[in-house]
Image (cartoon, rainbow, N blue to C red; front, side, top):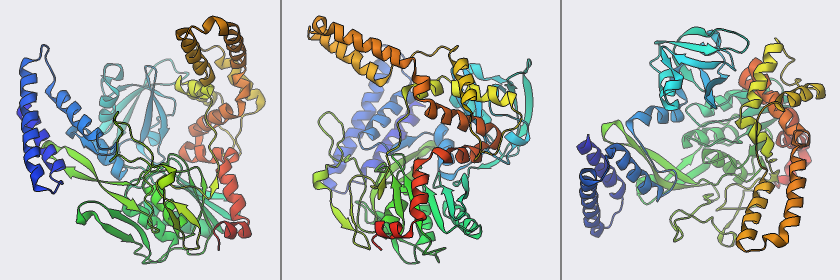
Length: 546
């Protein structure tokens, strides 16, 4: 095992470093690999305590790759299946999503049409056993691997259900689970369609196209494409999605690396679905990579109005490469550029500071580019929206209630008392129902300090170290008292935010993913702004300089 591990490291190093073309560096490569192998051997033989060879080498590999960028990663054999699921959106299982809260593993979502729902599982069930294995005795990773398996195989799931004394044992047959790239599409007004795109796995372009066609048949005269929180995925699917709204033969994205074979120009290949329908694209700080290609390309061609926050700023392309023993490495090989020539990569990993930290591209060296209609756009900092709408930050109390599972547990309690609820778009908790939650949660334990209290704590510590505390003590204690008093009213101060979280969690019990999306419409400022723009052709054309 030790020899195999060392060989794997040497092979990995050879693959990574062999991309360096100068011949005079090959000796340095060989020398350093030899040093590493000898060092590993000596440490393994002589270190005072027993060492785990796999863990030791894994730490070395991760440290080496982390010095490059966060996206160049080693994927050992036991993680390859998870990596494949992320890239394909497919796995063998029952279609249930779990979350660990405290010491409980709870069912938090189920995919419609798959065994979990058909077999009687419910959101809120606590998983106790998978077959005969108790979850309390294994890790989360081991539990995930047990839940998934070969399509057609059987698995039993023993759960504790709220309101029932004895555990329930349910039997399932695993199926091929395909997680949709488009978890929701529908009409949000008589003339406006909405498409939520959560991933860029295979068939993303086809799914979005089908959604747009369906919405047009229902009367949509404008489309909202929601890319918020979408981390990206397959570059080819980003091209396919742009092709829905752009003519055949239009440049979408180009990649440039140090190896000529990685310099590729991607163009639209198919007949477009609709060249004229007005489009808005929603982005936020969680929109990255392929999401930014779509938003940036449609912006470069003045084909859509971009609404929301500045995007993440990931302009790096990765490819997977096979290694020995069924492992893989994902390597950053190029940067991508939008049709105007913009690279939206925000962090410059090739020029780290002395302490290893990475700086953002400064505004002073960002370059200006012109869209098709002459609008000015910039590189080096993600995609800037045409209409900026910063997302409301979650309050500390909201984080705490969610992290402790109180939002989720109250959803389970509510569902146990209400066999049915109104349609998701119409559902809402009354003030009286919210007060029932307030009275319920006040009996729970949850200690927290707000961001301001944490800063005051740092100020107090600094004042003591600088010996100013006695002079400032009366003011500090007064502020502490007022903050503590204010915190008692957080459930009222952040009522709207907390109520929205409760409504989304409750609706999921009845309408699953679709319901969670629909119930959020009424407080979604980005969607409201998109509808306003799409319903005002003059404003839409003015923004795009048409």
